[in-house]
Picture (tube, rainbow, N blue to C red):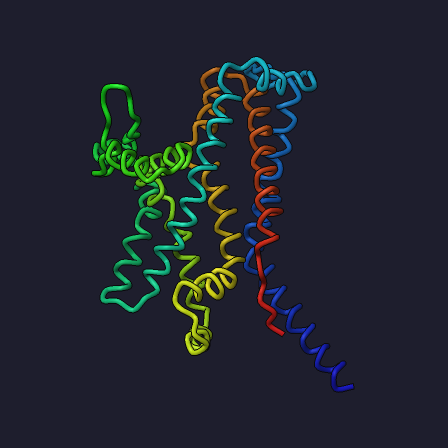
Length: 312
């Protein structure tokens, strides 16, 4: 009888917490249903119809998958740009996650002006939003940093972020590291500004997870003879694995929806410059399907490594 009463109280608390969750996301759900859902439906309708504009409005003529075939097989750059973007994000996303975890571990240590350093690493998130982003688009320094590609040619080698790429490549090759790994590392060095710029939110999430780990867990491991490296892999990473999953999904979504995303710019160009709303809607839906498939693959792979704490 006592056990049944305890389970009932626990179930009631879980339901109460669930209601709190719905309360906090209610504005988003209401906005999605009343504002975005009709737009989503219209976008899908546009992708299946030819649109004829007139002073009175527009008219639709059903053409089926014509616009989807145009996007996949006729348009000159849509498929190529999409594949290129996927390849770029597959290289950049792991670097962002690893860099964010590394920085968050450092920022979680006791040090002078720790709050200041945390704020500095979050500044790019503020800079990359709203009016500040538009103001910085004309900033010569920002354009120079964004334009630092560090691409090597047969005659010259550019310098990205103060690092001489040729020296880094030569050092790695002298260590007999495979050419594929060398190319990946050089690519990360070339894009270090982008990695830093898109790591702010992930660092904050990792910090919140690190602060939730009781110091007594590390003390017990130290008493048992574990060193810092073993504690990191046996304690920190397993406990943070749910946050690693969240950060991975966030990083993928952020990469596919950035303001400088070439696919989104292409869709806007087809819609507003070429005035082909049917094709742009089809491209948007194909792009959404691709993002959903990639997120599904990330979730399936991560499930094997994600460990959730039992709080019973």
